Structures are given as C-alpha cells and as structure tokens.
Length: 127
Length: 155
Image 1 (tube, rainbow over the protein chains, first blue to last red):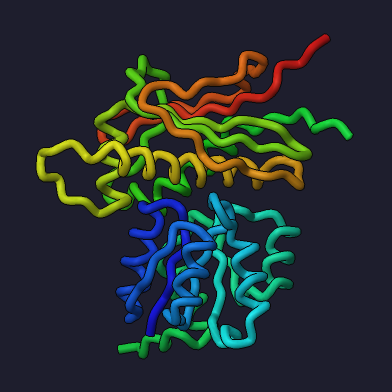
Image 2 (image 1 turned 90 degrees about the vertical axis):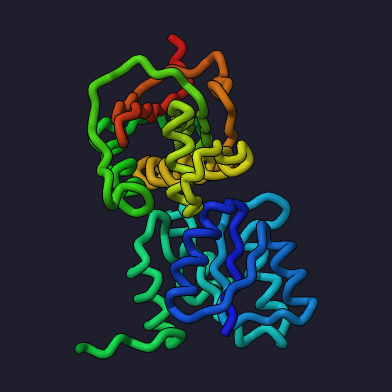
C-alpha cells in the first residue's frame, strides 16, 4: 500500500516518510500539488495522500479539489498535514474532500491514530 | 477593514516553540529557556502573517545549531561534514513555518501564512516593523532567538 507525501519541505517529507514506513506503507513523494497530480496521472495511485496546505506551484487545497474532480481517484484517502489551524480552513478542506486533518507539529502517534480511524492501519493488539 | 493590532505574549510564543521542539527535535535534548544571549546568526528564517492580524515571525540560530536541527529533522548521520546548505535552508524554513503557524493560530483571524523566507545570515526585515516579543532559548548548548514583529504604530 502506497502513501504519497506532498510537502515542499524535504525535512517534513522525511519525518512523515519515517512515520508511515513504520506503519507499513511504501512511499512516493511530491514537493507540491502539481507534482503530486503528475504521479496520479502517470498511474501511480496511492491509498493515502498526506498533504501540506501552503506549497509553491499548487497548494494542498487546490490539489484536493483536483483529485475530487476525477472519479477514478475517489478511493484515495486524503489527509491534510499542515500548520494551518483556523477552523474555517479545516472546514474548507474537509468540505472539498479531505478525510482527515492533522495540525503540525504532530507526534507519530497522532498520525497513527488518524490512520487507524480511517481503517488504513490496524489497531495494535494489546500484549 | 484595518488589521487588528495585537501582540502574542511571551508565554504564547514559548508554548508554541516548545511544542515544535518536543515533537520533532527535543526528545533527548530539551529546549532550555533564556537567558538572552549574544547570538552569532548563522541562519535565520521568517514567515509573515497577513489578514486580520499582521505580523512577522522569525527564528535566528547559529550555524552549529542549524546543522543539528537539519540532521535531526532529516535523520542525517553526523559524518563530520557540514550538511548541505539546501538541506539546512529547508529544515530551518520548516521550523519557522511550524512556529509561525502556531503563533498565527493564537492571533485573531482569518489570516494567511506566507511561505518561509530563509537566509544564511539575517533575513531582511521591513523598516516599519517593531519587535513586540522575543523568546530566547538554548538547545544542546547553542542559543536560539524567536521573535515576533508587527508594523510600527504611527501616531
């Protein structure tokens, strides 16, 4: 199962890559929304996209609206991972088709918990 | 509509910086608060917030600390070689992005956060801004300054 990490910061992509790799995902990366759309149009369809909001070229919100405009990509789970924390922006992203919203800074557990809620990661079984 | 003139408190900024540090950098080496110190700025970065509240949030740190932040965030081995400038700029930019986003969340909205501006040395500031909050800290023995500037009031 692939996760596409979309963030203009290599450092943030590296942090997210380590987290989702530990959760069992293989990863693809993109530095902006357009580069992410290029992955999708080339047939590299992930199960999950982790999306920053503020990026050059194409921002995360525009990426989400593009993905949701294409029925072939409706199964992709979209999760915003961003510093933008205003209520209005969260509502806007969810209304545009994001499934979940994580505010930076975050912990690995916060990402894991959201992915569990979305059914993309199995809940750990207590020992 | 004119922008709201408000200032984040030092406690607010301290809380934001500590949250960023504990999430991504400080698991083993916590951030130590104050005192103000003479800082040889190696790298700095700034973001601006515009909308209901206008302000500029900047981070200044010495080269050694910028290198450490970069190695920690990018999980680079310390091979004795300096981290590439491109990686340092990226890591310091993401640092101010998260701190600036945190400060923005505490101020009146709606507002928009700019992409970070990063410089080797000090980032240029507009001449009509005033520092309203300065947070001094140290990490792994190196000093760090986070400051918030707003447009100067004219009488």
